[in-house]
Amino acid sequence: MATIKYFGMLAEATGLQEERMALEPQAVSTLKQLLLEKHPTLMGKDFRIAVNQELGDDNRMVSDTTEIALLPPFSGG
Image 1 (spheres, rainbow, N blue to C red):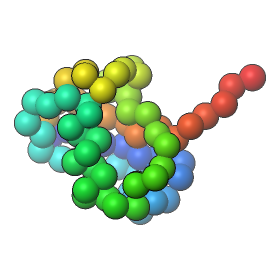
Image 2: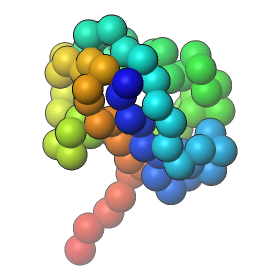
Image 3: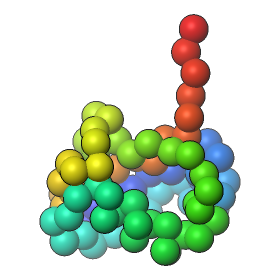
């Protein structure tokens, strides 16, 4: 099962810091849509998805063995 971690305002919106989910191999864009359907409170929120601790694009593949993190916008200095 994949591990999905939520940070900051995304953890507050879902009420979760982490959940486990069975995933078929799919693109990040498909996973994002699945998560928006499962957690409608994420709609309208700006976030990036990291796969195995690396930011990637929407075409990156995820599966059951993947660690996924939903990251809110952050600023650096």
